[in-house]
Length: 395
Image (cartoon, rainbow, N blue to C red; front, side, top):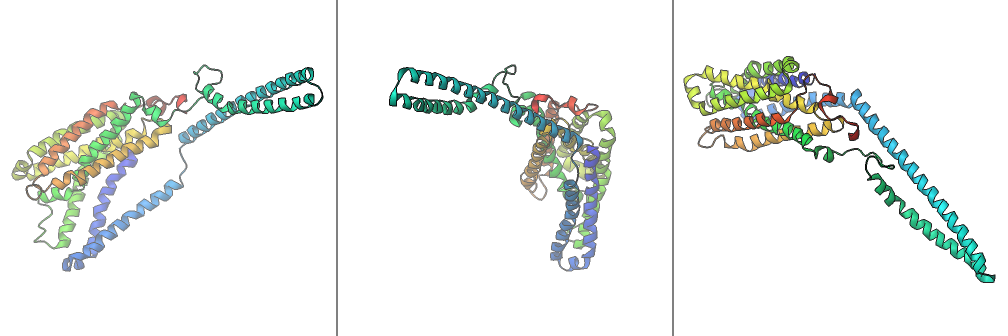
């Protein structure tokens, strides 16, 4: 189900250039006369992109939380209630002991004052004893909180032990849990370096195979529309099929196997395309298209789907959203590194002259993703309780 939801991204990747074609066609005459009309085009396209986002936000805000999440929330609330009740019982017992102690001291002090004093001194003694007892009670009560904290820190078999929920830091402080979070985060980061480095610059590939036309000779509207058509073709050939192959095989092959297979295939493809970039383009443009399409296919029939699915399954319910968010944030960091860092080098030595070396760099990141995937457990055919450490002590 998660993979099917995520794979709708492929339809979005196709819908985006379709919207671009429609909006460009609406401003075609204006764009051909003055390219500044493109300013209206991209603003309208972005505005249209906000519509599904707003709809999704409304549906999510009105959506009921999953039954599992509600159960875990109730479990945590019950644990806190038990803890509060135990604390109240402990406090009541301590207050009872203080009262009994005060009464005993009061009796002893009164008896002593009657035996040792007479007249005015006998009248003052109870008052002095009462002051002493009040001070003693305040001192004893002041130690209650400290004593309670010490008792809470006793061993699990201790009489007054209060169960404490493990925190996020404590849970991931154990290497067996931390390595899973590192595996999902680094794998997502490595993937997105290449994924966004290539997909946000697909026009370079479209131009390299000659599909886009000539920016100086063709009309601006025609050049843009052909780029949009090229993007649609690339997505339909590789990306969309890759998404849905993952959907239909993920329960048979397993998440981890698909991710390993995808990273391995991408490593090989980027090495081949990178080191033979100019040779392939010079000798066989169809061959280049095939290799590039295969790379798009294995991005999605591979880590682009699984890096999203796996973090949603391998962490306990209490930490799942946070751990998934950390993994996703690592991926977006990879996108920033790609677009703000590596892709700034693409024109080093001439226009798009560094693309082949960037593909070689992307191959290295795919290799990194391959190795860190071994830190991630396989979740195929398992319940969430079996996959992650859903033990009572974490609630």
